[in-house]
Image (cartoon, rainbow, N blue to C red; front, side, top):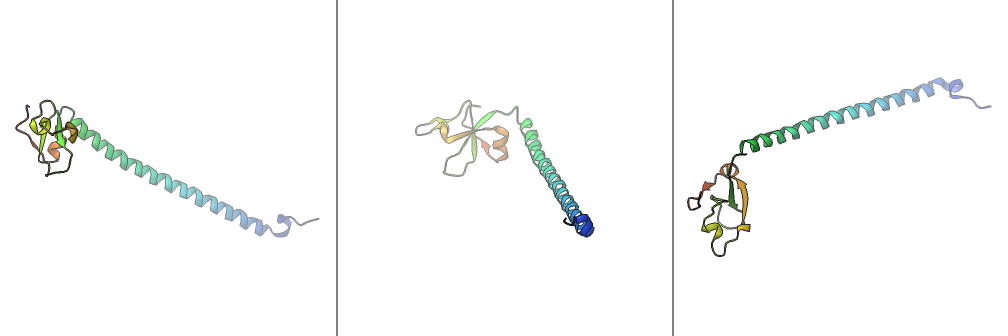
Length: 119
C-alpha cells in the first residue's frame, strides 16, 4: 500500500497548498489593479466626452457655415451655408470642396466671416 501525502510529509502538501494560496492572491490582486486601471481610464475618457458635449451644447444655436477643405492657399474665411458667395458657387467651384461646420467651430479656427456672402 502506498504512502499518502499526509502520512509521508504533511509539509510538502502544506507547502503546495500555501503556494496555491499565494498564487490565488496574486491573481486576485492583479485583477483588482486591472479593474482600477480600467475604471480610471473610463473616467478619463468620459471626462473628455463631457467636455466635448458641453462645447457642442454651447454651439447649438450657431448657424451652419462652409469652410474650404481642399488644398490651396491657407483658409482665412468661412462662408454662409444659406447664401454663399461666388467663391463657393462660381464657375469651376464645387460645393463639395467645402465642409459644413458650426460658426463657433470656424471662429475657434480663427477664421473670419466672408463679407461677400449673403448673411
